[in-house]
Length: 329
Image (cartoon, rainbow, N blue to C red; front, side, top):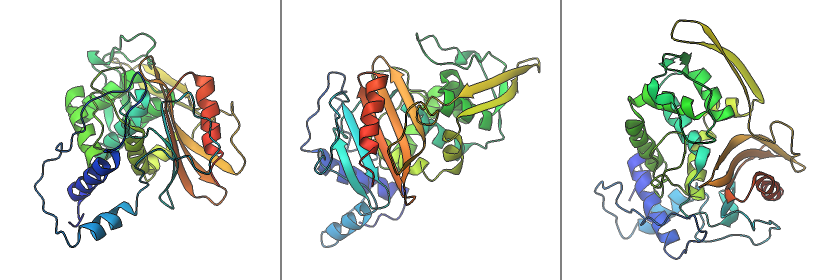
């Protein structure tokens, strides 16, 4: 089987992931236990038995792949997080892995995929208009404070989405791109599938709690691997603050004044020696616990992606992430 397009690549990843996860068992009280969906992408294909091994091997060689936990040669304390992974993008090596195929609630880590979809199907200078649907009622949910009729560019919206993690802005982006949250979720799943992230299901653009909204640390690696090549996303997540002006329904000025929620970027937590944190995404809900994605470079400028899902609290999460980043050489 030759993986010559996005559909073909997704099918290859489905087969790889199915084999790799066949012997895994889940852990963690909050893990989702939905059956693995081999047939989400049901395009017909055939495999020539004499070339199957070579084709699959060649495709997988460009990715970080692991069948089970990886900790040999590391000194990582990950006792509080349910799942975690450290991926060397240049070599394709999985340096550390814990339960990376467990289906868990990702909270606002979802917004990396939201940004990818927005930039794929819309333009940064598009003007977005908020509807009544931007009102978010979930207790503790982060909001910019949008009102119906407010307008801003997609570029402004992406800053509020990725830095402040504004959930109301996520709804506005989804409705602009697809007309509704439901249709945008379909786009999210199509995009995830095209990247090989077939062990996930997204039902909203913000990651607020829903029993049908889940992903894995490995699928997030695949999504973040794509984001690493998106200049706009990488530009935004490196900023410590962002200020701008958008408008209400009557054309009046309203201010965006947001700070990056990433403690490394804010300088609140030191990074390990020889490691440069480029940015990332935080996420916290009662269901998801404390979650964090970090994009980092080593002293040679080689890229790494580190992911923690469902840590017990913010302080512990950052301590665990620093341990993880300390394995970068």
